[in-house]
Amino acid sequence: MIGDLNLVRCLARVGVPVTLASWRAEHTNGLSRHCAARLRLPDPTHDPEGAVATLLAHALGCASRPVLFYTGDPDLLLVSRARHRLARAYDFVIAEGALVEALVDKVRFHALAERLGLPTPPTLPPTVTQAVIFQPVEIKGTPWPTATPRPTEPPLDLTGPTPVPSPTGVLLPETPEELGFAPPPEQVPLSPHANDHFWLMRPVDASANSASLFYYTFGSDGPQNQWRVHHGIDIPNPVGEPIRAGGAGTVVFAGNGGELLETRDIDIYPAYGNVVVIEHDFGFRGQKIFTLYAHMAAILVEEGQHVEAGDIIGLIGGTGDVSGPHVHMEVRLGENKYFSVYNPLLWIAPYLGHGVVAGRVTGSDGRMVEDVTVTLSRRGRVVQTTTTYIQPKQAGQRRDWHVVPDPAWQENFVFGDVPEGEYEISVMVDGRRVIRTITVKAGTTNFVALGYDQAATPQPVQPG
Ligand SMILES: [Zn+2]
Image (cartoon, rainbow, N blue to C red; front, top):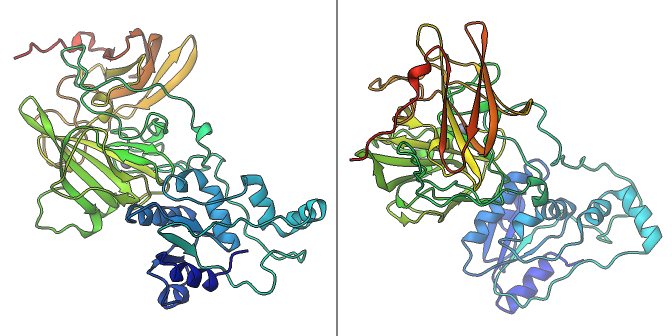
């Protein structure tokens, strides 16, 4: 096993800058004059996502791609379990996952060692320009575990479903294969119908999870009506996934919502954590368009910087008021304000072969029906459900905390990324089940009116 201080000395002697990463204060306070820098990590046993985010953010600040060394069981497990994400930023050598899990479990290791003999620990030649070293947990005598069982932390369950719905995200499996396949998105801008305005790319890669949380959709307040009305969409992904600019524009805010000066007339709150707001180069019907991306692990742009659509602006994280890593995205129209939000699903181009379904549920009084479940089914099988907006505002209303229907569609629910084909949409209105069939066309918004107000389908707006 590679030693700790000895390795640092060797690397320093040949001119390799070494950063010491540790979650123990005594290590980061003053270890070796050979360390070029020290990085304070969250305890990887209790906050593995925080530790991964800190490591990824550090690598982004390095002049060249660093090599990661790890010496204790907690860091071995951390690197193993986050290997796909860390490998984007670091070079390191690690055994395959099942072997790592066996190595840190004393009983399993003993059985393994009896079967195979002691394995050779991984080493790396010091031929690199930078290195990050985990400070090892105190190692006495042989660094490898002995047969003496001692308590180990239970392995993290990164693959199981989240037992309790959270308002702001779930932790997805680490293995990318389990995230599923998604086709590439349509090119932007895309406006097959005069009311369409798919001018934004989605803020995550096509290979990343792109599904918004179904129980906290835009304009809803959660399954038990217990949360704030949601002003954006939440796209859960593992910490460290890139967040991309939805469109070309200028970064008008890049910082932590908790550190915003009150003198700035924009609505950014501590709950957003690390947040970036882009003012786009294009507008809509004479109004400015802003997009907001919240809860970043790391911000990779600066205020005043111009970005192109698809540029990486930050990394998925869990900063601010969240219970799992995700990006919260808002589309703000007219002004950079919390009460000027519109449903991002009507602005982000759908996947190839997929359309968007928008609709309006109205009651016998002609008013929009709030907070009812809308079900989208295909051949009797439910494919998506959503909830109508809570107290959507009428045009011209200002200064309350609810969302606004789209200026073009006047909808109160939206389904994103629906494969083209025939569907039934159903909803309960005034104690009566209303069902419509709808043919979803790809690349456009497919509108459906449900309820008494059948003449309500928006007509195309004449250009000019
Ligand atoms: Zn959110």
